[in-house]
Amino acid sequence: MHHLTPLSGIVGGALIGIAASALMLLTGRIAGISGIFGELLQPGAGHRGWRIAFVAGLLAAPLLASLSGTPLPAPAMPASLILIVIAGLLVGFGSRMGGGCTSGHGVCGIARLSARSIVATAIFMAAAIATVAVVRHGIGG
Image (cartoon, rainbow, N blue to C red; front, side, top):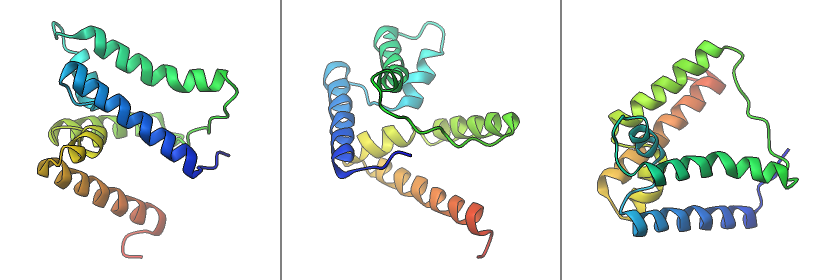
């Protein structure tokens, strides 16, 4: 089991901030994975190189950490593959419908003081809190 420490949180947050800032400074784009990955899937979309590098970095980071001996927690997944697929499709649909995902709105949008992103992040958080309350405690307690 991995125990989060203040130092790991500070280092992780700093790395996310540096990466998001570098992407904004170098490409003028926001580091929101739904937009980056979504546009990567569209035929003929421009700027494929940095998009591929961004997604490759997301996949490579835990692999490199694992190879370096860092223990990675196993994700808790439901037994039903159909449930996983439905959940993934709902998240993808919701992030497209909301004009971005939690990383784009929550990290980059709030840092830019975007009112739209602040509202979107508050809605994401409220939905997450409600979901946990229902799943763990049932509807109405």
